[in-house]
Every structure is written in structure tokens, then in C-alpha cells.
Image (tube, rainbow over the protein chains, first blue to last red):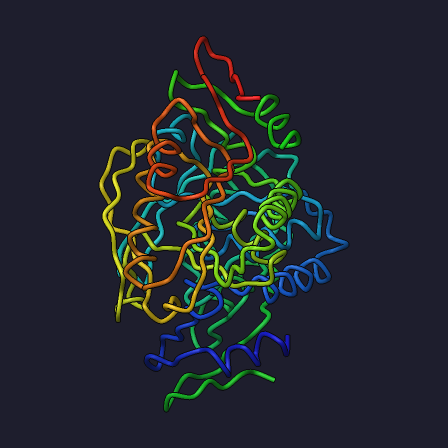
Length: 190
Length: 190
């Protein structure tokens, strides 16, 4: 998606060989017009897949997921990272290690909102080693729902997440695929 | 906003005299079509106020804020509750006590994205005692930016937040004002 790659080139900051900071338009400040374009692109790619729900993780997945949900006409569930008093009843959970934050956290989705009849599109802001994606897949499997695929805003293609997900049989659609962050520069695949 | 009040009546769950659970369309599962309508209503109310930025808090404020940002054509910043490795540089912070979660947390916004030239619309999912709103106001004041007002999805009018904010001189626009949650029923103001 050229519009996204242009934004990464102009506003992304390479912090290290492995960390790309996109706080200017995705992870802290959000560009709503870009999010709408991203939502439309996810919808275009999964339009014919019978999606009934989108599942993402708070917080940075919410904006692209809601825009995709608007385009596809389906609800969005965001997995919670921290249990709240109003979300205590029947939870599906998974443990996720965050490389960026260097902490292990439990993510949770209420059984209320996912059923065996659902066909789910997973959306997230980044795909690196795939830990978050696998946590969401575990939760969706626990609900008995089927998974149409994963829509990723930015894929770090030099890490193993995409390869592992594809080997497990999942379709991965990434809107920007970063081949390398070496020498402070963002190199994309194609 | 009648569409929102209808949704609260049909899908909200009164957990106690003080807690309204709206996990079905706002706090866990999100209804993107309703969020778009909410964003349009916030935009209508603040269209002529020279807004340059919207500021909200992760996670439940993001969806309504991004939809309002799309309508108003301005970026959205979501204050972070937990510092991440890619957001460590120059932070404006405030301490907020959450009644719902019964924890005190630090919220943070990078100095990169707010300046004295900004005119800010604050958007949040709930207004109860106003602790979160006051934390955001503190951060925006630290940046030297001006505040056009607060757009709230659901106001618990039986708590003191709105009164305190208005007494401090802030304009508060709430799309649903809950007068009471007594006896398991949601009563709205007007």
C-alpha cells in the first residue's frame, strides 16, 4: 500500500535494527484519514471471505480495526490486556510476551462476543515474531470460531512471525512489509 | 443523541448503582457504525471551534476519537497508560485514579505531538468523577495548548465530573447523560 509506505518513509523513525517508531501516525498520534484508507484496503482484501467479526488488541490495533469494521459492516472486538472490573465474567485468555515492552501479559476476550458461528479477521498494527497474533488465534480457537486470515498494518518481514503463521496455515495480508531497518533506513519488500 | 441512548437501553447492562457495562458496543466489542455516528455528532458540535487536535486516552476513547478526527480532519493523540520502549523520550504526564479499575496510573503524551499552537478537543468514553479528564487537561496545559471543550460519549450525571469541569470553565458536550442507574434501570437526563 503505497500511501502507507510513503507515510512510513516520511514519518517513521528507525530506533534500531529491530524497532521502527511510528508514533506520529499509528502508535500514539493517529492519522484518521490514513486509518480510513487502511480500513478500506483490508476490506477490499477480505471482502469475499464471509467475515462476521474483527478481533484486535488494545490499543494501537483499534483504529485500523474499527475502520475495517466500518467498511465490512461487522463489529470489532479488542482483546483486553488488563482485566477491568466490568469485564470479569467469562473470559477466554492467552499469554503474550511483548518484545517492545519486554513484559508478559494476559490478553482476554469475553465469551459473550465470540461464538462458533463467527468467521474472524484478525487485525493488528505490527507483526514481528507473531506472539500477539498467536495469542489472538488461541482465543479465537477456544471460542470455536474460524479464522479467515490476518490483516497487518506493518510487517517486520525480517522476523519470523509471517513465516510461522503461514506454516500454520493462516493467510497473512500485510499492507507494508519491512525487509530491513539496518543502517537507520527502512527497506520495503517490493 | 437518540441512537446512542437506544443502544444503551438495548445493550447496556447495569451492574450496580454506579457501574454501567457497555462492553457490547464501546468498551470491549465496538459498533463501528455507531462510532461513526458519534464522531459525526462530536464534529457537528465542535465544527466552528478551530480544533487542531483531538486528545483521548487508550483504549476505549480511541474509536470515537478517531471517527471525530476523520470528520473534523484533524489528528488524534491517545494518552498512554503504560510507558512503552518506543515512547520514552519527552513526556508530559499526569496521575489518574480509575474508579472502575481501582488503580492509580500515570498517563503520558509525547511533547512531539502537542504544541502551544494547538486547540484541543478532549474525547473520552465515560465522564464520572472527571479524574481522567482532569489528567488530560493537565497534560494539555503543560503543552501550553488551549482546550475547546470535552466530548463525552456517556456521562454519569449523578457523579461530580461535569459540575467540576464546568466550574473550572470547560465546555462539556455529552452525547448520553445518565441521571441514575438505581434499581437496575438506566434513566437519562432529557
